[in-house]
Image 1 (cartoon, rainbow, N blue to C red):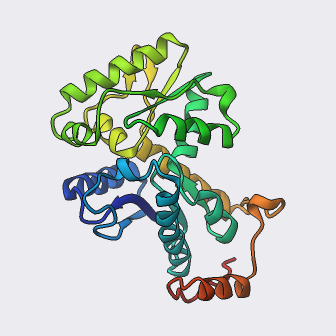
Image 2 (cartoon, rainbow, N blue to C red; image 1 turned 90 degrees about the horizontal axis):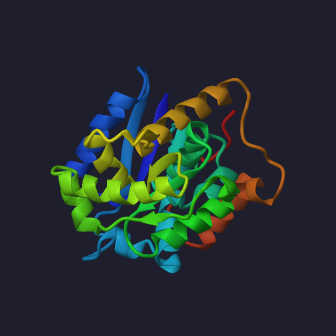
Length: 271
């Protein structure tokens, strides 16, 4: 099994983060599963942190087009699953509508797993604006009845980056926010951005006051494996309704030419 794992990070940012992600992915995946990590093009965010950029709808829409290009490329190159490693799941709906291979997203996977672990979950995120993004995404997924409002933690992108190697201060802030959520009824916790989830996972934070903390990378990869297994059993995404309607190969190629998207060959349907 081959999984294309698409990060929202640009490729030249935080090499240690990517190397740690690769190592953890190998330890999480079952034997025989190959995971290839891909980022956005180097320099995508310029001098800004990704968390400062992706809170703007127009900017994330531009990055989503690159993700969708890679989704088509993953299918053309014979991957079994396309996994989006970003909690807001950019391009998830569009990719599912056009690919025949399974498509999974970190946010959706982590939330459905959280629903198996407790009655109500809470997403904990950093960066003002992410609370609105996540609450909106939760409503889109139809999970608002199982979720508390997103809880912001007192940390920024730099603090989370530091927490990957020196986690004590970040873990303390995460636990403070988590206990607020727990007092409000949370029975499962989801670290919002994968950057934050990785910091918690590398620090060994799996439970807070007997409330489980969802490992975002593990949730995404295990969902990817499961969906590929189900695909082999003949269970795959619906093609009824607007959100899963699949255009023809000819329509896709024509639209991509008109909008000057990169030429991606062999985009024919897979069985």
